[in-house]
Length: 124
Length: 132
Image (tube, rainbow over all chains, first blue to last red):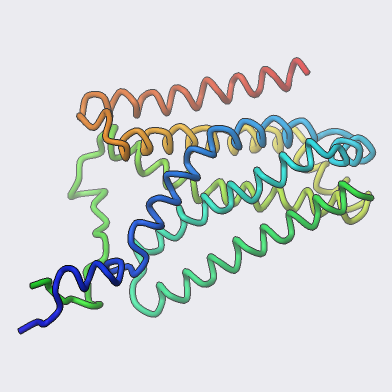
């Protein structure tokens, strides 16, 4: 016989332990993609193929640097929810936990590296 | 009483192949996941280029030479298609999540819209970069 009530389980935010947080994050960041994806494709696509000096002056513009920083961080947050969900679908047990940590490490490293590169390009 | 099953839950079964007929709804949804994971790879490559630009002119010329070559441009257009497709696919998910267009007929139309829309946006991207 169980002594846990439905109310008690909901208090723990369900089997995942995080309630609808992941789902909501995916919805919210999905909407942000509508703005970020066009901005990223057209700014980055423009910069590639130009000379070193042109690339430097392009990314030293505050507007372009801020847009690119938002695009990188925003899209990585969204894509992390995407990869996490794929991992949770097909990997179980201790492998799932380790894979999720590895994915998080990769995503946060990308964010840090991207922001560092942008900062250096913007202020040098 | 709430059932208590902590752990030992089944994983999502992989149904594509002999068990599940490919349909516009399933294939377009799977493509959202594939393009999402691929786009993280595209972002990785973009950050490599940015890091190279922040490091030195020779590092920049190496990456810029590859990305700016003809094959590099084709691959960048493929990456753009994946990003456009993922964006449109996510918009469909948001529409569904808010409770609209959940019938099969509309869902299939939106699936076609994602493939056609992503292709049209990629062609538009190529045209914009050819002109400017």
